[in-house]
Image 1 (cartoon, rainbow, N blue to C red):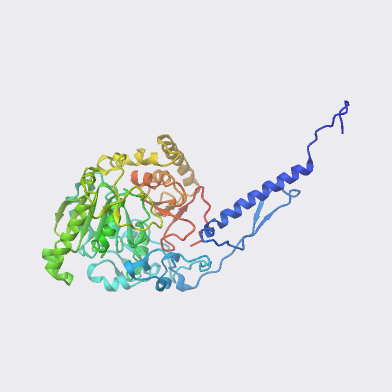
Image 2: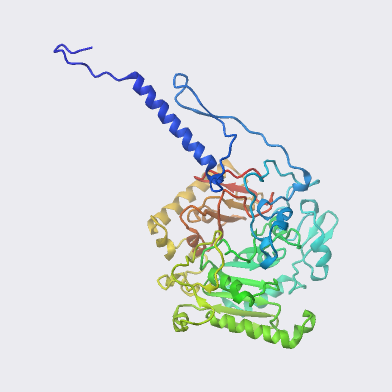
Length: 524
């Protein structure tokens, strides 16, 4: 067609419009496809069986159709299947430094694509706070700890239940008295200075459970070993816990995370391998934080006879431990009976005085202190960055003011600031109000263990702080590392890569929260 003057009229090209529409839809579909295979792409394996259908432009406006997928149920012997810490695969890995107990995730060809069944007789868990003291036997049907630790009162079986009297290896008469003594040694546990803690070799997490009532949020850590299902017992009780071991890899936490670390005869050889395990505790403990040890070689003068050794050997072990701690700028803070407390240096003055050739060595600038995902342990200790003085325990706001104060380390996260932190808090405070309308159980005793699968600053957890629950804040290993901010505000969390299975037992979380993350994690 032409104008009256003979010039052509520019009409829309229908064929071109259709082509552009089809191209746009195809690109969207391709992006979705790439998201689906991203995790397995790390193993250079493309997952097949991804079927997508694009409607014809003539029939719809580009809607995406995905065929539903059904999974079979696994056999009953997979009732407590944890893919990356599966005892069936231990024989593939050596005993050196117990590497077999670390994360060893199966390749895409070995992964199970079935639904993990509950044990026979499984019942809904007992609600918090009653669950701290008892759980259903059929939910965690394992007797090893009951049989082997009966004299230490970790737990005992009565009828259809396991009861938890609060005992432990170093506190068989009850954890309450043990923590009371600890608070006498560390007054900062009473006034809100100490808020976050980690218990290495936690048993059934009675120490962490007792601290919850004292306003201290603890991650209880234990491997999957012959102490059958320690972490599963902890989570069944409603106490924060993760599977893990200090071996050849860093723990999945940033530097300067915890206010306090604890070991009650956890059998970690602190002075062996050049003290590399204690260097990891030094990394994750914030300046001014406390390290507590009860058990060998503390109080060796009275206890050595029960440890199948000589008093000379125990004295030597204690002197080696003290020398190692001093070389990393720890000072003996307090000591009484079976408990000894050391404090990490509050500032960098001590580190600056150490000779350049001192042993153990200080890590150089090439070591990223906050890297905690499949990062090998190094034979050096991380010196805190002196420019973040307010991240030390002495200079931080006390709990609960700490929760809403913008942490100093927020400036380490690209694009983050005090204003973005404040905006995020306000956003989630409003969203939680809406969530509770959709899910009335949220905020009641029906929801105890919660995982925020893609947190930023932990604002989801902060908005729920007055509810009878705890939140494990998960930061993706391939996203900006905001986990230091989470810990600085007095919350707990962990680094993770959702291409792998999470480090926990099945049936241990009441609620999973996902905001803005495509997860290929199978239903467990």
